[in-house]
Length: 181
Image 1 (cartoon, rainbow, N blue to C red):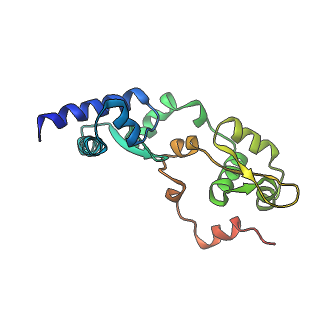
Image 2 (spheres, rainbow, N blue to C red):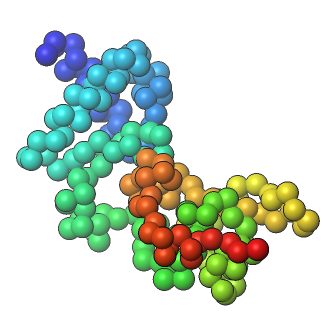
Image 3 (tube, one colour):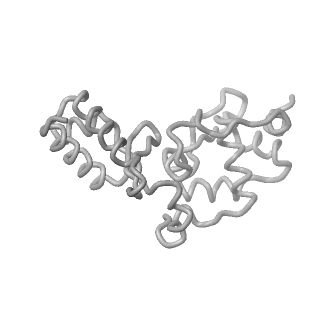
């Protein structure tokens, strides 16, 4: 491996460490003055290095960006002490509401309530405060209700690169998320 790639890898690793949050490859290239190809090579090098059993870190692709995170194998032991405030336990009702938004987005409050069978005002407010959902526009129907979708923070907390990475629903689960009428 050329010596230059070692320096470039170290520079990219330092940027990822300093940023903390996921950052896209284009931004990394701008910050360190390297080409996108050099950044991609450095990320590949880091990813390979982090796969070693003696390493407790991994590269994660979250919300279209890259970040350094603790390997999933170790996170369960560490999350109680090092977890973020937003990862504080939320109620079952909030998780149900969040799941509906994640799998049905964009979705209105009324649609959430139709699926859940109860009022969703407080749960939506809580999820907005925690930064897990956001307003995703207005539905083009009378009254123009607000539609909700998930945020990058949601992707980050659940270690997802995109909504497409959500676990696939079984047939019985899909029926629960369908809106009839």
